[in-house]
Image (tube, rainbow, N blue to C red; front, top):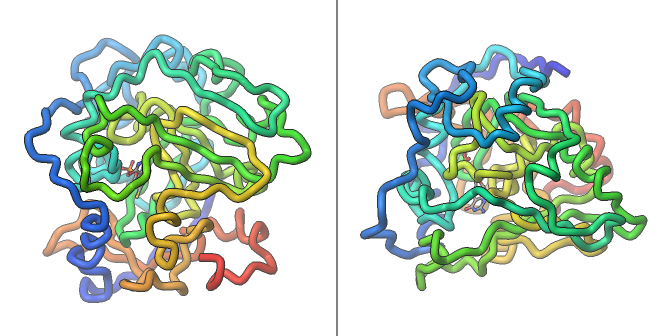
Length: 337
Ligand code: MTE
């Protein structure tokens, strides 16, 4: 499936959210990450598969992923006329509060995360509950490249080539029962490797939790990613398994998932719990519904700087309206933000 998009219109730097405003979201979390080890860059010089992206090292994919990469469906979904964000920006400008509140903290600190062996607990309303080794769990699934826009609620955006599996295929595999109405996801909780979870100042009630309605989760655009830029995920991007839901604000795309539960009630999610008037359960990208403290009409596409702000209009459902709008027919998107 190719997603064709009109060219985004230009606008002025003054029309986008100043960084000082969304930084206040960060101060909600507080906590100083001073004195932590710098160790997160992907290992260089590995003789693994050759990356398809210029200036991207091959990484150190585990054997099961190398095998999957050889048979991946490249560019199964892409965007038109929009440049892919440089790997360096995608891996050094991150939100992963388990590793600290600043954009550079995840790259600096996520090297401590041990991503193998990794297991995923599947429970709740499913025919096949269990604790699965990641490589066994994904064995029957076809790896696909999906080049998606990522729009953060803070009004910055990127275009990232993910590698993953349709969430619908993953769910079918575990056989949801008739009572399953939502999917709840949970990130690893490990204060030893996650300095943000050790910080007494962070307000998040760990573990980080996110959720989707089951029909949203079954939409073909929703994926579970295991790679990016032709290689394995960098730790700071949520290795070894993260959700990617491109029509929703980035905070829905939960990282380093250890548990997936099929449930009958709407899950209590992290950001909704922290500030319910600012972050809703749906979190669909919507330029017409502003965040209470800033406009969502425009976004700063990375890389961006003072003299090249790279500001563009935000699109409804992040440009995926055709594919997802029907999920919300009859729903008041101002109330259900
Ligand atoms: N998942 C966990 N576990 N912890 C987080 O802090 N941050 C979210 C989301 N997933 C976050 C998370 C937010 S706010 C965004 S914008 C995206 O991850 C950022 O993904 P990226 O760093 O890969 O660009």
